[in-house]
Length: 171
Image (cartoon, rainbow, N blue to C red; front, side, top):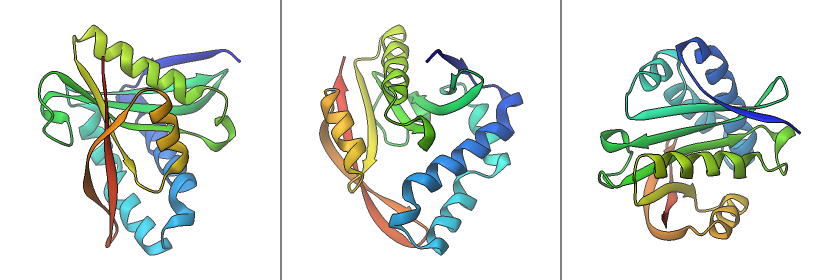
């Protein structure tokens, strides 16, 4: 399987919205009410919000292609774009999402490696992320890659308060 990772631009906006909604729904629909999921998707992935996020200099989106198909995507944040105040020495992996058809093929690992590469290029000392406390597959993956839990924060799926575990890895 040949893969290519490509930085997203404003021309990728519609594809970014499609894959965001698709992968988020695939991952979390079984664990949330349709109403809460719909409320979250409407808040998180409208085109105007994604367009603003694409324009933030300290945020980067990347698609990973398997052949001609977008298999997943990655969103990274540094500096003031981080969703938690982690400082200038940290890089946040805000999103790693892989389409169901491409899971268990090493796509997530390639995206995480891209995040680590970007952090190293920017001389960051830490890479961190938040993972839903009940996402056992993701938690196992990140622990295997050397991430450790450093805290937690509340996350709202519609009106349902959930907990994300904050995990970090020193580079």
